[in-house]
Image (cartoon, rainbow, N blue to C red; front, side, top):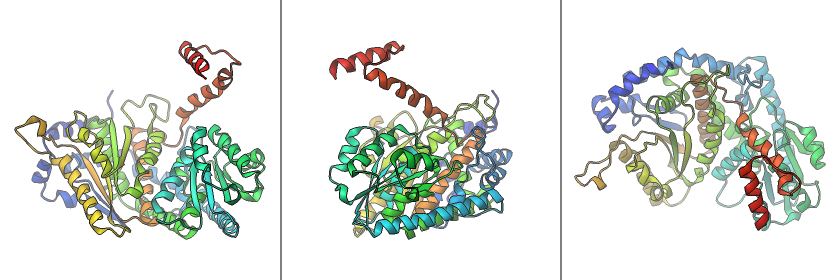
Length: 503
């Protein structure tokens, strides 16, 4: 099948083989040409395996796909989520960058809900509550968990915020064991309020707290949330069907973030994201960071055939970023059909994974350096650290720089066991410092890169029907686990028998 990416294959053939240092030798201005800054974020793509002619061909693909128009449709609130007939207005949660009526109304609604967040936080601050348990899963958990962990002070603030997501009862037991129910409140977060994990864990919290007086909820179905747990309406904050769960941390879903780091810093997070939104909507394709990141991802996936993508955070406070990006990227782009239902015709999302340096260097970096599979990487580091240990931070940065260089350039040795092939591509991302503004901008960049990739592939980044089948089967198997029904699948039937025999 002929695709728009076929035009790039000749460039890949021309460039294939050899360390990336050869590109630097052929292009004296390569570092400057492949470095981009926006506010507190700096991106260097010089160690990706394309040169200037290949980059120009990639830009032609972006123009052919009308990426600029696609971003305008996203910001204006057009129904870019075509399979569900919805807009995707997460950008309106953090700023107003268009005169489109639907976007202006969405932004006004978000501002109103933030004022309600402030009122609820004031009530909690005036109470005896010291601990907050945030109950949610997926987009209702990963975003708030990442930001709260990244931006929390070394010593607890007014509230200690804990996160409970897994349906495994051991997770609830371990979360609640050190807490005092008399000094704890809980926030139940679910877009539909039909998610099994959140309902079960919410029930545990309600019973453990001795009632619903210190339960709060965030949902696009506030009536159901209030009814399911007898939560007073004033303690239920709304979200909207035009915000996907994995894009929702900017909404009232961010209440645990605000409780963990303070409302003022939560607003700074939104400001950072909004500043990057302005960059995306106002910058031509050639200088647009999210577009370059997306085109690089498509080059690595479809032209070079790399089936995995790593993200390595050289800041321990960003240790949860790989898990957050796994959902954002893989749930958004894990599709095999186009918007019209026809086969997509090319490979879509690679497997995203990663970890925090320098731990990962002593774990799986052996395979990255000398294994047979090439894994492109995003390296993320911070120039300035808040920690008072300057020598440690210099060592961290030296390792960040060294790994990127070693993967790219390799090293020849007459001993094949000590030879490094090089040619392993990476993008280096530096935050001036880890602040609410820089983190907000970084997350927004990844959101926009994901959307741009979806446009290039002609798929929908905003539905996630693939998660439903397993949920449906799990609900049907609950009676079977109690011995009340039979199942048809012979393997599942044998497994149920084994569980019953050992249970």
